Length: 156
Length: 326
Ligand code: SF4
Ligand code: SF4
Ligand code: FES
Image (cartoon, rainbow over all chains, first blue to last red):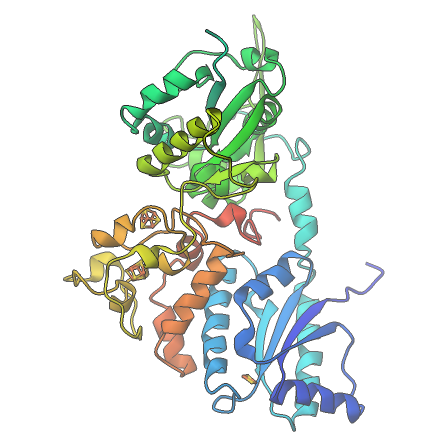
């Protein structure tokens, strides 16, 4: 095990509080690991579970969703919907053997740059501990024909 | 007599319901006979794979392929029929989305075999099949059982999709009418890749039940509901109904008789991941903003993966569980 596993995390941030938090972390030169790729959307409510599943299925090891604190969403209560969706998706993923910790929801106000940077750092370590998800590789292997071990011989 | 165009139908990993649905089109089956020569249709007539192998390429005009790709025999027949057919239709939910056999993608091959051969479901407990076996006459082989179930279009190029478990007979009849009209130069085929024999909207759009504002604080399974309101939307009664994500085409048969839509017509137009769409719909109607209460409400959904992907797992973005592909 020579090289350290560097997880790839896709981060969906809302345009208002939480992207500003990430921006603030940047301007204040608060460091956080480069493992996260941020994608800015207008609101966390825009995060369709499809986006999360697509990220995971195409090679991301985890997905972070950030939004304004409850009660502070700029589109009234979309972030509550996001909370319900993420919970439901985590349950479905768990049943499919995918650690629910690979999908995380964090609230951050525009002033919480440091907190968000800490959360990202923590998540990177958590995902590193979980190990690679490597969905494209798994699927490739699962569709190779004739290379899996033969089925157990008859033991009657 | 052999100037008639050729027709084929084949079953891969499926239950046989699609064949019954085709036979259920009533006297229209006579139109099929009048306009086509049946070249290959194992359920209806005897034929060997060898016969198909010997046919010239593209010599079959229309093949309805039902069933998913579970093993190498299924894959071989998919490739062979693709090669021999001008129009290949992914027929029914199994070929198109994996359907219920696709739920095996929640489990590893070993788990599937253990359930099939080492559990009470088997009357030859503990005896596993072998891929190859020597007998005096030679070597007998079984097709390789693949790691996961795939849909037809994950294995070969598909011209049209016809959803449903099984497709409704009136829809099959309409598609057959269309093909016959095309044969006689009276109509044109839809663009390649189209979904045929179904609508472009959702089951909810076809459903006659009354919808108000959906606000749910408890989900209930059918047997937990003392009396189902005969006119109110089932989802509003807390019964998980897949209508909002499912393509229309069946006429909303299930909700009409008080059973929730299970989603057999597959994803509605432009839905990328069927389960994701349903999770979005279900989360929107939960009437709580409190994390603990939300968890309590979600506890009512005992089998989320099986509910949201009952027909669609093999065609979902993830395709299988991590257990299946580890
Ligand atoms: S959710 Fe079900 S019962 Fe309600 S309108 Fe849609 S199909 Fe009908
Ligand atoms: S209501 Fe749903 S499950 Fe029932 S036949 Fe129609 S699409 Fe299939
Ligand atoms: S605008 Fe930030 S979560 Fe809605």
